[in-house]
Amino acid sequence: MSRPPCCRRIAAGPAVAVFKPAGIPTCRLELVTMTLDEYEALRLADLEGQYHAEAATAMGVSRPTFGRILEAARRKVAAALTHGSALLIEGGPVTTGTQGGPRRHRCGRHCATKGQEP
Image (cartoon, rainbow, N blue to C red):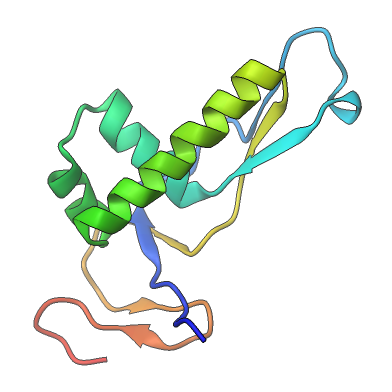
């Protein structure tokens, strides 16, 4: 059994949670769901132009984990654009804010941050 993922830090949620092609009702579109941590990774890497190591530190994850989150986000955006699907941004193991305090797993267990014990 794999361990539950640690919460990832995000600066804030998106201003708009659903993007869809114009002129087609949402009920007639396939829905692609992107998690909030995937949205944050996309924002940090592609909009802000941060290097993976810098963005991973901001989110409180390792650099390889950041790369996997970013790859999943890009795949979902590409799928929504090429298939004409609606893109919904919600959920995921996240905490809002930039402070480096203790974080929790979804199960309620605390994550250790640098210099702290769980």
